[in-house]
Image 1 (cartoon, rainbow, N blue to C red):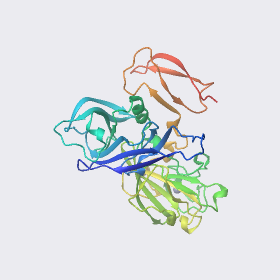
Image 2 (image 1 turned 90 degrees about the vertical axis):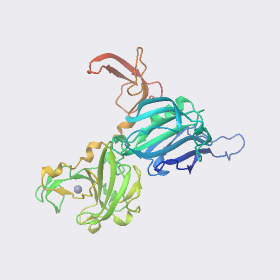
Image 3 (image 1 turned 45 degrees about the vertical axis):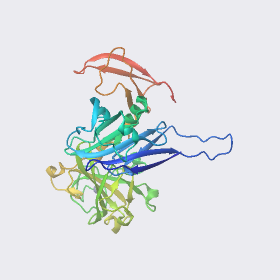
Image 4 (image 1 turned 30 degrees about the vertical axis):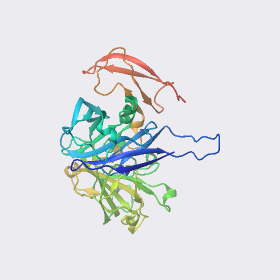
Length: 395
Ligand SMILES: [Zn+2]
């Protein structure tokens, strides 16, 4: 285990927030000859340091004592032009699908020193600016690395970055999510006559998905988790819901609002305006009855385009339904991001023969530790086919 601390860096440009990221190893407090097992990397949720840092990443063991990594964030429409530094290299690239520019920079001799930042920020070093979304303006993140950090370590860190607007960063709202019964699907036209639940109070197109509880959950607290990273916009009681919470998130470049219906309002501890991390507990489901709006204990999960606070559980026309999105389409239970991860080649990188494809795959879908890889050209025509072989950890 390691402890992680941080200190606020001096704000140089208006609107830029800097953090020096310190990672310190704990002193081993063990009997002579005994050693502590340490994890080689640790997944760090950076929004815990600052809600503007909407990403998580594996922090390599090599990032040791002191400030190996310096992060700033700024809001802008375009990548910034750096005037206080000499740019030796400026190369557009992609970081897990996000537009980015990698720089090799050095502070100009006549420019003021970057005070409040690690000393090496005044020397020649590598930095990368990453654009959160294509929206204008958007948040940019600038990651600067101590010059001694090896390129492979930098690459591993960048490869592991998961931004909160990546679909893959979205989390299931309930435990054992894939096993839940869904009685009311998205878009279903409900009437008291055809409803799968009784009594039915509503008529209209269902704007969300209802996830049912397991019998043993009837009498215990069932936590509800934020499916994405974003601000808690509002929490209140509303007819038909009991407690309802709304959260604003980004799905790729699209602002969306999530509706969590039938919560026990008193269990929602965070205040409106607070930032919720993907997977963070929002509160608990309300027990059946008045606290749940009069009905059974279950989660109504709605998702609509834009940031207007529309909490309607039903709409009367298909046209109105068009503004709503099907939460089931996120396929939250599969966590596809974890299934395949390609480390080499890099997106948009040029390749030549022989081509080595390297990465990680997980799951039941590949047969006897091997699976085919197709190489397609720009028109989708197959150029080559090969069989990938698992190198280790085949079970
Ligand atoms: Zn519902």
